[in-house]
Image 1 (cartoon, rainbow, N blue to C red):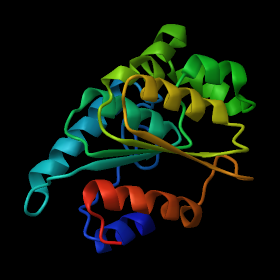
Image 2 (cartoon, rainbow, N blue to C red; image 1 turned 180 degrees about the vertical axis):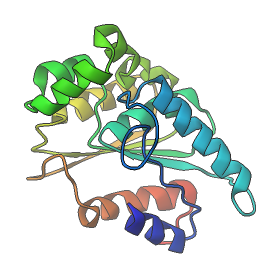
Image 3 (tube, rainbow, N blue to C red; image 1 turned 90 degrees about the vertical axis):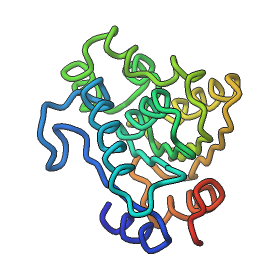
Length: 198
């Protein structure tokens, strides 16, 4: 994500790239968008706000895959976000477990997700009415890891709760949406919501 961070910084954004605990080079035990992960993201956001040059007036969060799940949960907790971009996310973990064709995801849900009660706590769709920032959902039409129904159902819940939500389903693309495809979809949203230069 360094390339994306560099691009956004050059467009006038103050950027912080965060790996969830237990993923990438981050310390800690992975908990698949659980409380430890959302707490860590919240602390990172507080740190960014404290140390950003000139302060931050408008903040966007962009999460991908289980990072989108964690970003949605953070946005449901925090009221200081101006925009939320959720890409290829998992929003109802019980439905994901039933519908996903990816066995590695099912194993991760069993290992890290805390069983069905844990899945409910990690399912942003159940807390949609708590989210107030505008949301852009980007999802691949052929995603077998996080079926497209995840984005569609979550968008419907958000709309029903009065949230400004937009969706972009990318045709003929699976779970891994490249930045060359995602960025042109996200850029106008960020320009409108946080004043990204171009």
